[in-house]
Amino acid sequence: MKILKTLIAVFFLLFIFSDKTVYAMHITEGILPTEWVITWFAVSVPFLAIGIYKVKRKKKAVHSYLPLAGMLGAAVFVFSCFPIPVVALNGMATSHPCGTGMSAILLGPFVSVLVAGIALLIQALFLAHGGLTTLGGNIFSMGILGSFSGFFAFKIAQRCGMSLFWCGFFAGVISDLFTYLGTSIELGLLVVKNGGSFFRATAEIFGVFMMTSQGVLCVVEGVVVGFIMVFVYKKRPDILQQLGIKTNAKSV
Amino acid sequence: MGFLHHTFTDRFAQRDNWLTRIDVRVKLIYVVSLLAINLWAKNVSVSLSFLFLSFAFLLTIKISPLVMVKNMALPMLFAVMMLVVKGLHEGENEWVSFSVAGYVMALKKEGLCSGLQTGGKILGGVSLVVLFALTTTISQLNAGLKWLRMPNTVLELMSFMYRYIFQLLDEVSAIWYAQRARLGHASWLKTIKSFGVLGGMLIIRAVERAERTSEAMYARGYKGGCILTCHLKPLGRNEYICFSGIVFLLPLLLYAGNIKIW
Image 1 (cartoon, each protein chain N blue to C red):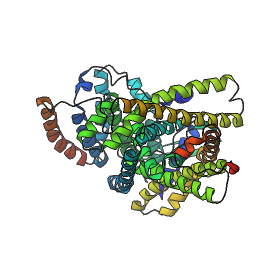
Image 2 (image 1 turned 45 degrees about the horizontal axis):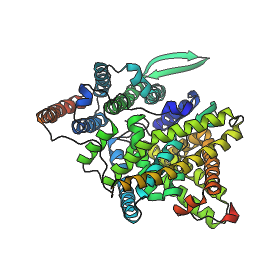
Image 3 (image 1 turned 180 degrees about the horizontal axis):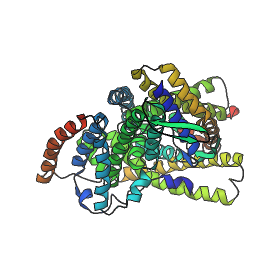
Image 4 (image 1 turned 30 degrees about the horizontal axis):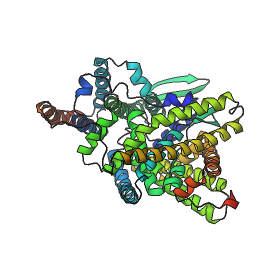
């Protein structure tokens, strides 16, 4: 339980003392022990492999698919650099969105995992956010959980007949929530070795995430993704059609 | 512009010096092996030696330690937090205690040791990654990954993403300034709406650019396949010497990493 308290205290202090930009979804280099490094890489590899297969298949069918996926990947990377202002415990802080919900809507969940993996590699190397040994863990939380939850949230919202704004909103919110849940699970699993309770640790770390700026960020990212979807639909509806996103004109 | 400060540059990797001249395959093998040692080592001095060596190597190529510190700011904060919080919460034997506003805080020996171990691993690992990133361009990295049998699709996608991140950042930066100048960020709600418009424009421009790029590439005869702008020379004597260097270095590091200090 001491480890659990330690982890919670680390996150809490980090959020309180960081008054500029908050980066919380990346697990930094050196935090995960070897067994978990291997486990998270093993979990992520099948998803990446399917993502590669899907890109290859689409590339054969549509010549322009690869530049499109690369460009949208770059756009989502840039989107994830937006300094979104969030009112949090530490006053007016800025945090950056995950962007995986949006990339899952635009590219599909498996390709989104691949794009997130590449984005995380670039971030780990050139921004020192995350790490190379924690890449598998970060792909699991941001790429896999973020993309699939965002994608299914969008689809379910569409089935429920919601407007495009709300579909985008739920995709943004749910993908963020699942990303933080994934990070909490990964950190929560670390206390099991020391006899701590996994569920309690995960719940408490997730609680700290939500109580600080990240809880607000989830909602803000949802609103921004909703606005983006509506803006693209109004200005260039053909883009959404080209990407295979079904829209109902009445519901926007 | 705020968010551009968090982005990156490869201007150091474009310079000509002894570290950028080292073959990317050698650098990749070293970084991966040393990261594995860093994770496994029970002795914090191994991780800290990686940190000091990385700083020393960068000094030899005239990269200011401030650049390294700036790159490592967040991991450093994590490492210090780990040290302090573990010191306060873990262990029984009190090392030093002090009073803050009537609240007695005691740093424990075991907690400090454990915090130093974790913090050392963070700093050692990140410093190795930063050293690699500051001396390797993305084209070299792609060529190295290709040598390691990374699928072409991943390399192509990574090349595209990296190539256009900078252009899209420039475009977003221009729109962001324009929005700000026209009171688009006057209130919190307006800021969020402006971000929606900015994100939407980003998607539209990315798709338009993708269409133009694919047409231009098709016109130049591109039919798919890996786009490498950097080709690796066959492994030479220097590279084999470097590879054999790690064969001698690894057992030493494994031995040193196995010695428990506490």
